[in-house]
Every structure is written in structure tokens, then in C-alpha cells.
Amino acid sequence: MHLTQEEEQFLNGEHGEVTARLFRLLVRLGDIYEADEMIPVGSVQVAGVSYKSVGDPGLAFLEDIADQEAKVKVLTFLNPAGMDLEDWKEIGFPKDFADHQLRIMDAFKRMGIVITSTCTPYLAGNLPRFREHIAWSESSAVSFSNSVIGARTNREGGPSALAAAICGRTPKYGLHLWENRQPTIQIDVEADLSFTSDYGALGYTVGKQVKNKIPYFTGITNANTDHLKSLGAAMAASGAVALYHIKDLTPEADLVETKRLEKITITQKDIDETYQTLSKGEEPDIVILGCPHASLREISLLAEKVKDKQLKKPVWICTSRMMKEAADRMGFTQIIEKAGGKIVADTCMVVSPIEQMGYKKTGVNSGKAANYLPGFCKQEVVYNNINKLIDKVI
Ligand code: F3S
Image 1 (cartoon, rainbow, N blue to C red):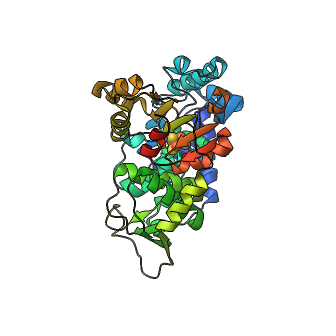
Image 2: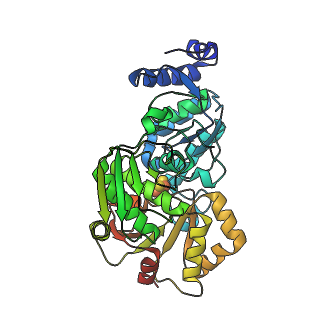
Image 3: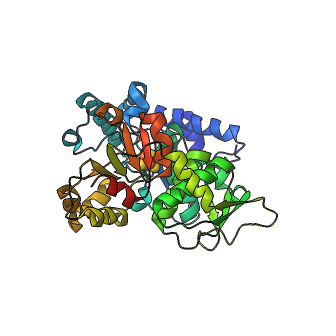
């Protein structure tokens, strides 16, 4: 692999031992995927933030890097942590868990990483431009940035993203190259898609069928960005799809080659069956929305739905701290809290220890959360659209 003079200095330890160690990791990765050079990245998003995911070994690794005073070179955001970093006591997160989580956040902060903790960095102040090379980790954020924004990233692991942040580089391979961004299968959608959960069901269905391919969709005409983040998150979870194109909707769709693609059709029956597959129960003991993290529009929809009502079961909506601030200012937080619900920032239903908090049946409108909750959090899932979920707990 060709390395610049500065990159040779990274390897030789002239920029410190941590940089050398992490740059070696990037070079090894580049060698495996036959990259011929490194490219500068515009921003990084690091996963592996929740204490529930990284445990004590992850905490020790991060503290070691921070203790050696390594600093990131580019704007770097974090994936959700395991708890609301401000209201964790009030919501009931265990103290021991919180102590470890706060040490993880401190280590990241000492590296110069922005303590954002969100899987929707593009809504919270880290918005890449079209065709910008970035190194992001979280699968739904990777999908959104590649597909909806047209930025370029592989799905980084926690350590390779951290290495990209400290070195400001990533090896040039995979989805950084135009030839690898061409669709490999066409999906003709013949179904009525109205709710975010419909897009989650579509994403789950397609992901299961296409595994690792790059879908080119037709028949999706009026999806908004909330729908697209739900679609991409579910496809990434069920089929490791990191990039999709939608005819007349996503920025690279007009530029790619679509002749001679294998085609499959998704019908209303497929979507209905997925709702049934994902929903194992009827009565949730908690409803958690905001996977991926909720936009202000999604928070406002919940506020509208619960205004002047009283919830019989807990309802959370997970989001970034930035979005919660905006919701506070708009009065949405107050409406939701008056009804008995909660805007939970910095975390989500999958990476927080909800099973330790006594919850067993969770209602969600996200195909990704429905996919992960049974395995990661031992939850029985109730899958439906926001209206039907809230009706169950009012
Ligand atoms: Fe985000 Fe958690 Fe879903 S990280 S995409 S809210 S599982």
C-alpha cells in the first residue's frame, strides 16, 4: 500500500505509540481488502460505547488510550451509550452500571470525542456532504449516510473507527470506491407504505432476502427521511445491507447501472407477514420508540398522540441530547411527561439494560429493534405502528 510521508511517520511512532498502534491496525485492514492507499476522512462515528456492549475489557482499552493522551484528528461522534447520561438515576438505571458507563464517557471525552451518543449523528450536528469519505460504525448510520446522503463509508468496527478518528485516515476499499456502489439486485415494491413501521417491515423483509447485496428499489415514491432511516436500519440488521438506492429518491440512484439486475417483488402480503413474524405478543409492558434515534418530527408525533391523555404503561422515545433540547424548547417534552411518558436521551432500547430493569415485553415500531430485542435484551416484541402501540397503553 502506498503511504504518504506523514503516514510513514504514524507507523514509525513519530506521532506517539497509540497512533502507531492504531495506524498498524488500519494498514492491516487495508492489506486484507487490498486497498492501495489511505484516504483522509471528514468525520468518524464510533460504536462500542455502551458498557453493556464493551464490558470491562472495552473500558480498560479506552482508558488506556485516553491515559496516553491520544487525541482525535477529525470530528468524531459516538453511538448510543447504555443509559441517559443525565437522567439515569430518575429513570432507574442501575448505579454500578452507571459508574462504569460514566468512566467510558470520560475516556472518550479525554480523546476529544464529542459526547453525543446517537445513532443519528446526521440529525445532531455531524452531517457529511455528498461523496465525502467518512468512517462510521453504527449500521443504520452507515446505511443512511451511504444511501440517503451519498457519503462514502464502510461499516467500521469500534476499534477501526477509533483508529480512523485518531489517525484521520481510513483504507480506501469497499464502499469508498464507486465501482462497489453499484446495485446488485432490484426490489420492486408493490405495497402501501404509510407508517415508519411499514418501512421497518419492508427493510426487515428485504434484508432477509438479499443479505449483503446492494438493493435498487422501485415503487417507493413518498418516503421522508424518518422512513428512510427506518428502512435502512432494518435492512442493515436483518441483511447487513450498508447501501441502497431508490429510484428518483436517493442521490446516486440516477447514476448507477440498473440493466440486467435480478429482480424480486415485495407485496403487501409480504409486509403483513413480516408484522406477524416480528410481533410475538399483544400487550407490551413498555413501549419504546426512537430506533434509530427519533427526529424532532417523530417526537412531535408522539406528543400529539399523547396530549391530554394518561399512559398506563411506560412509554419512552429515544433520541439524541440535541433533539431532546429542541423538544424541551418546543414543549413536546412537557406534554409527553405530563402523559407519563419520557424522552430518553443518549441511549436506546437495545444497548441499555432494560432486561435488568424488569421489562419483558417491549412494544416497538422499528424493524431493527424488533430484530435485536429478543436476543440482546430477552424481550418479547410487540411490533406495530405508533398509533396502535400507543392505543395499547392508553
Ligand atoms: Fe440506534 Fe439503538 Fe436502534 S443504536 S439504530 S436506536 S438499536
